[in-house]
View 1: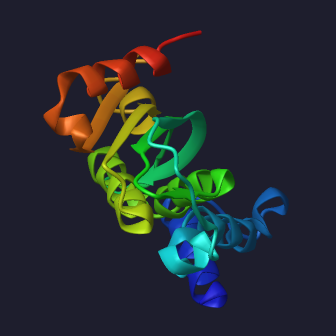
View 2 (view 1 turned 180 degrees about the horizontal axis):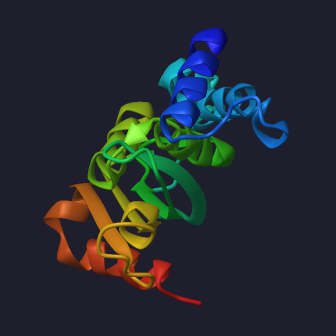
Length: 185
């Protein structure tokens, strides 16, 4: 797979009119292939392995929020990065998830070719599957280089998406509490 990616990156560089044997480009296909594999490493991960049994019994029913989780992903339409932060909340029902596992779930899905809308839903669904809470909320705010570097070239635009499950969808007060808490400085 690595050699195939290297060959493809070499072809792309040549198709752009560059000499892949030029000093600065000699190892670029190799480096680009390694970077591309890393940026898409989420395809090699599964929820069960990411969770690694870090689900714990707990008698709390209060909202759990992890905010400002950094994320980097590649837009599936242009293969350009989108960069932002993710906020995740859930209302436990007898079980909680290890704190770092929430960030790892975000990372697993972000490290795939994505659209932000799908990414948001995948994270919410994964938390729902992991601990079957009363509700899950996920908000992602991201800047898309495909919109900043090309096309409309709008540098300050931020896309915000949300996925609300369970009580977060049904109860405006629960949703409002979450949104107020993530917007605190």
